[in-house]
Each structure stands twice: as C-alpha cells, then as structure tokens.
Image (cartoon, rainbow, N blue to C red; front, side):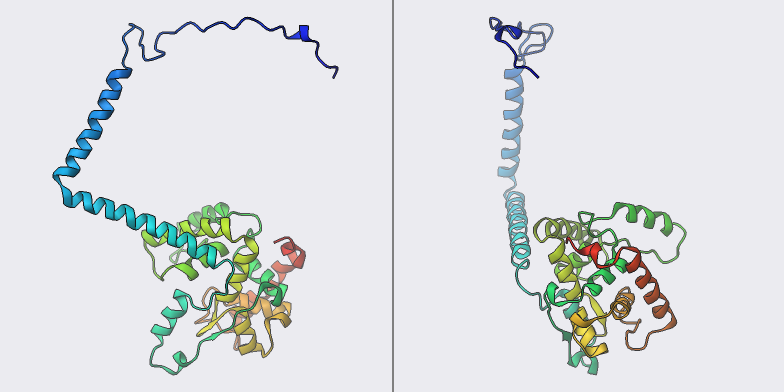
Length: 286
C-alpha cells in the first residue's frame, strides 16, 4: 500500500458538538437533574450512616464480617502460593481417615511418601488422566461437557455420578473437609480457580499423584507402588499404573493387591484409553 499524501485526510477545524437533549444532565424539557441525583445519593448514604449509628451492634458485626472475609481471602491466597513450592505432607483427607480408624491396627501407620513429578513414571500420570479427567490438559479447572453429561445421566440413575476434574479433586483433598454442602462446593470452586491460575497443570498433577487415596491409609502413587508392587513409582509399568488408577473411585473397597473382576476389567479399559490418547506424548507439554 502506497503512503497516503497529506491531502488524503485534510485537517478540518474542530467543531464543538451541539448539546443534545438528555445530555449533560438535561432531559428533553431542558431541566437539569444532575444536582438532584447527587442529592439523592448523598441522602441515601446519610440514611445508611444513620442506620449504622442507631444500631451499633449490627455495624460492629458488619465490619467484623468484612474483616473476616478479607482475612480469609488473604490467607487462602497465601496458602495456595506457598503450597505451589513445598511438598504437601498432611491433608484434611489424611486426618479424616486417621480419625475414622483411630484405635485400630490400621491407624498405626500411614503410607505416604512425596515424590516430585520427574520421579514418577509418566505412565502413572497418563493413567490417572485417562481414568479421571481426559480433558485435563485442555480445561481451566472445570469440564463443562462432562458436567452436562453427568446431569443428563443422573436423571436416570439411583446413584449420581460425579464430574469432578483432577483440579477439583486436588482442591477438595488439600484445602477442604469431607462431606457435601453448598458452602463446601462454593469453596471448592474458589480453590479450583485459584490453583489453576497459580499452580499450573504440572504442579496440579504432581500434587494429585501424591495426595490421592490409593488404598487403606495409603496416599499417593509412590506409597501404593512401594506397598503393593515393592518398587518405586518411577518404575511403574503401564498395567501397574492402570491398576492404581482403577481403584481411585473407591480405594477402600477396591484393592490393588487383590483385584476383583471389576478392577481387572477397569484396568484393561484404562490401559486401552491410555493408548487411545496417544501414550505419554499426550502429557508431554504439561
């Protein structure tokens, strides 16, 4: 494109726009309402202040609530930032399981050992994605297609199935208590967004591989690998990783050591899904 000459766009004298009806505080009749609107706003604020002054207890509760909310936002944000860089040894789920089994032989030992993402077989990382959240590399914490499918299916099921992503499961296991409530679900959404923004996919998957329940009082793939296969998670084969992933929906009832027909069938399904996803290259860019 040839450069434009100055004559292509000649400068014109600046003309002041004519005031239109309804602009600059005027309506069509020419009356100015800007002053009255300011007086109304000021009057409402005076009413609020007077209400607070007449009810000091409510005012104190209001400002206390504001301080609590601000404090929780700051501390939760700080906790997420710190936990991006340090191993997570204890989670509410571990404490809950220990309390549930307190006084039994099962509670005498917690099987848990932290391993960095690079020290865990990529077959294990791929297996949990194939089993729990195949859209994990693509979504931002929520798989809305899966949520819609779950809603449709649950209309015809006695036991509703969930649609939680790996990120949501990490938020629940690391930061929240067990149970179902609207408050807890709202906090789960908040922490899901927060860790997606701050941690990134690789850290989220690393934490999941270390905190997911994989057996009775057993947490993480390293603990499961050493307890049931007698070697480190770095040496997990595809079938071994698929079997660990197969018990994730209910690691208390489903067993890695003595797999039921259901676990064996689910293990084969997960192994097929791992191949269908393209193998380890599916998670290469996390």
